[in-house]
Length: 349
Image (tube, rainbow, N blue to C red):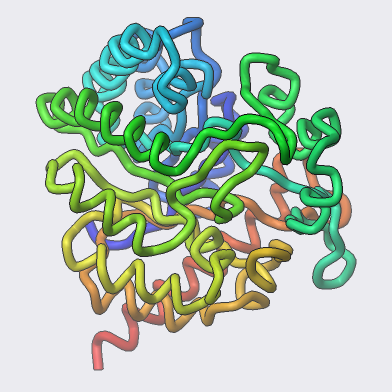
């Protein structure tokens, strides 16, 4: 199909979102953790209802990214009850695939994305998300404060383990065991259904937060995962360029991840965003203001054979913007479309 641009990162499908995607010239749509019935799994009929709406609007339903974290947090943490959660996750894979959606994105972060500031200033006074590890460390034993850095639903959930600096820890070795156990159980089902399970990098990409180790905070750990379970046809990446840029080394990680995984056909889609700085302190920004050159990255994607879709993901909030940041998203999507069009034009010479 070639590289294309999709609209996404919302939970509720509406006529307005479908019209926005069509009006801005996107060919497809992605949803992040869509609001669907079910406390432990999704059913095919419910997912198909979403898919039918998208197709009726003349758009391709490219992917669903993420199920609710409580669907599989016991599997991520190796807790009692993980096998029941895995069985339900297998059912959800079947539901998504049989609804005709080819990709299901996932993360392996039990306590998810952390932000120490959600209104940090960026270009022209727009505001953006920021992470500063020194703030986390300064409040290492203030669990209420730490929960405030997590997404709202997880921050309020007592089931999400969070430990002070002197409390118990979930180690990286334990997390690797949990990841391997989970993936070996779900990848065969995805293979049978012809679905890709697309792994998202850790955000922020640090070794541990709140006493829970992270795995996907540096390129070498993605290669380790590939060697462990990635030979499955169902294993892929939802490659967030912003997360790669956040890693120690910044831009170099973006290049390394693309050069290693794109030629193998292992990148299903890309979050095309960037940051200024890298861990331990970074701030999200407009495309073109960050660590990497967007034109250089698009050229590298084409050179390495990537043929998935690009997504705007997080964007700064501009003056007068909506809760979903329509203005910021329009800028990001138009920027990506311009880059792709120029790449097509240059390829003719």
